[in-house]
Length: 99
Image 1 (tube, helix red, strand yellow):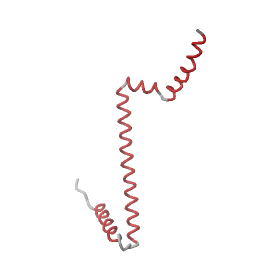
Image 2: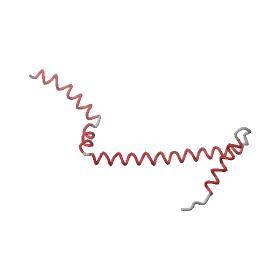
Image 3: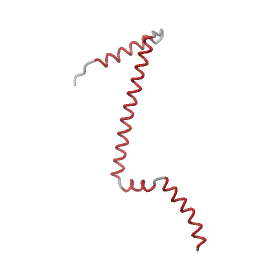
Image 4: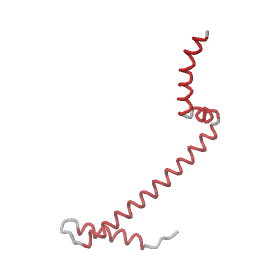
């Protein structure tokens, strides 16, 4: 009987360690409380949305800045295109909006 218990004890300890590392208890808590799961998913979705919005805005601003810098050099092939694009963006920024 003691040999059987000793043989089973080590795999059980290993399994318990795996479950502990995988936060299995937290997963079970989430499954049994759907309101908490919904709340966490809502917060994470809002965070992702704000992060994407801020990131895209920064990348677009950097792109416009680089296009303005390239327009100064008057590149023969794309200089006119870049200048026109910068004019459109600047006109859009200075256009008054009606609420």
